[in-house]
Length: 391
Image 1 (cartoon, rainbow, N blue to C red):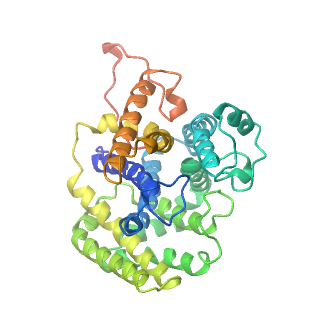
Image 2: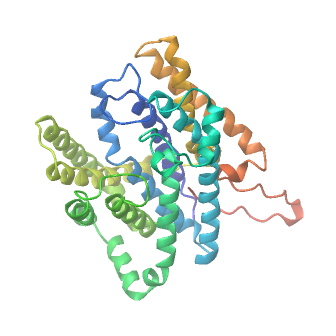
Image 3: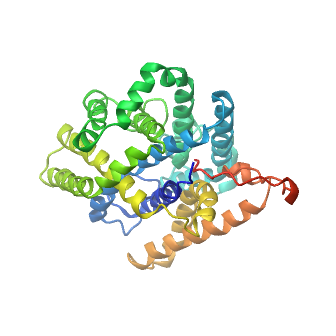
């Protein structure tokens, strides 16, 4: 298997977009987030909506691709254990160490706690109780905030590995082969139909919660895209087709985005907007994958660093955003300079802490990184195995 640099690069860029999006959440008016800037602007809803309709869907599709690569030569039970450690250990560490400051800052801003992070932390470790709506997730006593992706990915990984006998049976293999044979308009339309069905049947009854329990609509969407990613893998015919269609899918996706935004601007809401969003979502993903395969499939110098830095950056970034936002608020830099300083400070903080994490052996597993293998002697060295993206 040749190394797929485009998937490595796309994974890093997708998580980079998540960081940029969360900086935007501090400044967008009218959308709930843990803190809000006094410089919040309503116009930010438009570009952020254009990204929000596919950003996490792309992440879950890439995660399905990664699972397919990681599963080569590994049994389902062994792979499940590896992924459980890589996902649940950082989740537990993040909820205990990284996320509590986010909850404290939100509770303090809501007037639900007195100043004093130490006292808050002791109560947090006891699981509350908290004033109603003190912070997102306070009804559970503790929260995972932005780390919700990790338990969701663990759940989908467990489900797919449990279903592996069915997926590899004759019927499952035929279904996968049919998906990989889709070409032209069929590729643009048929995989979108389950997403539209979920919007019709589930979306009205299961608004997004990110609490794992009541997220029926998002579970259906994200697991389907996760499965699509696992199906796609490195099938050369599928990637050649999505690259061939890149202009058509890009232009059609932009047309669907214009429809979504136009409907909203004219006061239309509900299922028409949701179904148009489903079409935009899938066409945008096809376009992104096609352009990435064409432009990013090369050994970029920054890729080795990015591959090992993505996970720690993901764990760290939102707490750094909130911490820096509180520090910057009294300085009054204004609506232009402050977001730029906040973004630069978040990037610098992630880079500095990740540089330490990568070098300290006991920190690496807490941030989702593999333990460093002991150096081999030249006489026992083996050819390098191609790297694969992982969550």
